[in-house]
Length: 494
Image 1 (spheres, rainbow, N blue to C red):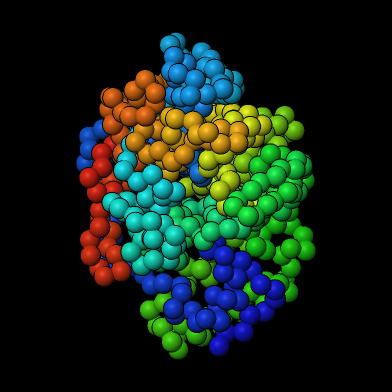
Image 2 (cartoon, helix red, strand yellow):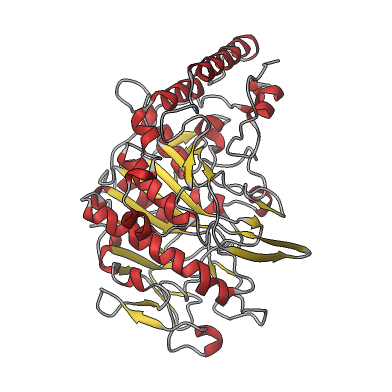
């Protein structure tokens, strides 16, 4: 049995490091996939292949209403239109929700897809972010089901590593996730699938940060018989709030001492001994190399130091958990990160985030729209002024949309709706000021240019320089296309 030195450390799926090691490394760490190195190179003949050096994906868990964001219906009946009006944008003829005034000024720098559609109106993060053609609800509630396919960031990490010149040793991890491990900061219901290595193994899970900070605004939430009344960091955080990895502080200091580094080396040597004894083929070398690189990387450590940003820049992103995590994501890609995901996740209770079955309009007005408006516009403006927007792909998406019909509940409510919703992309090879697709008069169905979430994934791969037709091999060594039956969305390419 491996002996763990030091306190418990939490991994991205909620297990502590002690749990992981004491169960036995061979059973949990996964194994390397057999099969040939994935082929890389565009076969589509479309522009923009490899244009994006990096990607920042902003995921609104629970799913935003298309009507209260990028596809308002000002002429629809009140029970569809809701409480918000629409406003003009920097793109002639394009209107968005009045709750997004800052975004209205940057719509000439993005492309909007108003016709995303699929048949699964559930919280399908695994469906929306992997190439798996179908993810049953039971799998969505089982993060380690062996039938899961890898998260898009995990695929980028794997393919890039297999094609790296001089070995797979990036100074900054290719697949990072903020502000904390997905689905880990709320009570109620079970853990959800999505951003994991799938059949590539847990070695390709995203590396997750921890939020070290304090909320500034209280919120009350209810879920069945559960009640929550506490500080909500998605509504505001203190300036001292930060993000960090276990043992990797933004500034050099007591967080990483020689003694602690030696203890980590002792731990890793024990893992190596266990690997040789129990599972010679176990791929723990990657974990060991990553741990030492992160502890020794000054540029990676400094990427978390938000004191290097001006107060104006921090305010431009919004002094919220989502805003400051997104600013940190920008710093991470500048340091060399390849794929960084920021989740607007549930907090405190399940059924929160953007899952607005009730109190829809108060939450949209007081928390959700202001937070999204400031953060997404801030990111786009900041990248543009720094001259890096054209090489940084920005993607805003969710697992589905919300019902056109408003529910007769406290504060109004919109339920799950996957037949038509909106996605926004910018930078990294994306055309500016473009609108793709059209919904009907109530925002309920697609009437022009239906787009699958798998098409969005194929487009991201294309812009990141990975042919969407690339084949990987699953745990049974079966060939699997990254995104079967998907196509790159040519209309949004620059």
